[in-house]
Length: 276
Image (cartoon, rainbow, N blue to C red):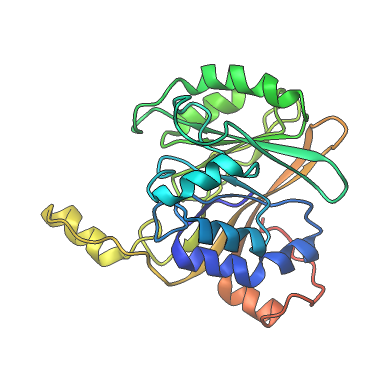
């Protein structure tokens, strides 16, 4: 699973290299949080199609889900993309997303929003208690994206769902954390997957206008930055029979390194090792 895709730099690195990485690492499935893919805020149908073609199989979103209103029809019609399950029932979108691997295993992803320093939403723990049993009726391979600001919210959800899902993976804060672990009972956890986008930035945005507004309080346009583009996330090895995760490894691929490894092609057979 990949962390928040930010703007065209994040989309472009996936278009250039994700299929090659999937082939080289023997990945069965890729999940990504795409709530910042369209200009840094929201997702459009055209970018959704680009990301699918690039190799993303399942999509989660977050608090910017409806920033591009044209995505609503996609949220209603597609099974591979979901809204936060603790959003109101009247909000458009499915409460979980699912797809099948080439080997025929069904994998599902659930998105939950934290409440600390976030917009008001329903209780994510109550939503999890409701939605996880529904998902378990179709598969035991369940990944939960906990889209939250506070570390405590993410850890609490990890322990709350321990033994019930394959993984609880944090998104939203755009900074990859070094706390990947198996919490117990086969549930993998990381506090934040990091960002798929420009790291020479403030969480994906150009540094200068963010600094100016922070100091002066005068509004500026926070454009998406462009330098030091990276793809960040984790690789999970999950037992398909039990739904238990055997291992979780952080990965972070830099654009310049990918250019050197693949020379812009998708046919070069290289094994990319997860970063320590």
